[in-house]
Image (cartoon, rainbow, N blue to C red; front, side, top):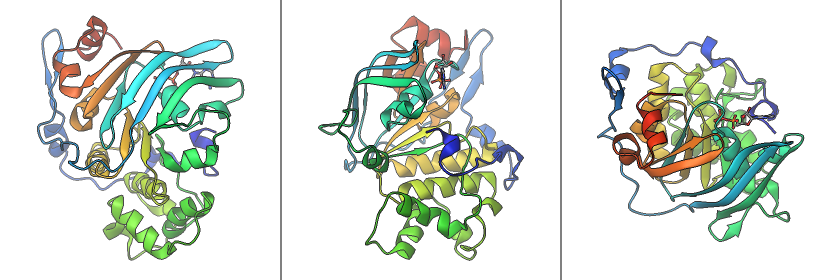
Length: 305
Ligand code: ADP
């Protein structure tokens, strides 16, 4: 299954309009200082620390190998995603970031000819074993895609409620859960008076928060986000980044991003990948100021990628 075949037509959010405000706010938050030969990335000081109380499980990857036919796209990756933290995945295009995260909720294997091997431990449970209920895995490990993909014929309310229906969740008060999810996604105040309007009537950034509401409606443990803001303008991007920081209070978050400033703004730890291998995973400050591997340093200082 890909982002495009969840029963929804992804919309071209770039063509949507988002409320425009003073762009200098976005620039202030950019945290980038241009150097003569290199680029320095400042790690945001207002980034939230991980919550004191751990409420979500972490994920442990052991010796993950993923293939597209004969193409060996992920090569022996070991990586621990800490509970209630944001882990950013960075690296040049084609290095395997998306493939790796699609392995985590068993979506990679939906691609014809694709397979993945290795242990994916959610707590003490290997969710990559053959006998696991894949639907249950995807309920526990939700995913948000690059392009907001609300169900095009459904209202705002029904888009969120659809998350419950598709996961076969019964016995909850749908109205309450929809409100709680929209509040959790930071969208309630903007939509509470027009819940029956089409989901696609929202701006691109609002649609992405609607998709986040749909994801959290089923109360997952982990949220995988594959470039969730790359189709959005800078202001909508900042809202998503703020939301990610709020979401880590309840969920473990994996954030794929091609945008190193974004990793520096929101991620507690950052993992750098290159040609299907994990080069380094460390606290975000270390990755951007004192990485352990020269390849990481070359990448974060803009020498390639
Ligand atoms: P990234 O997310 O870092 O840009 P990807 O995970 O998309 O990288 O890609 C990793 C490698 O897998 C690349 O070499 C890419 O060409 C290959 N790949 C990705 N998707 C497919 C696919 N559907 N079929 C075949 N190869 C693919």
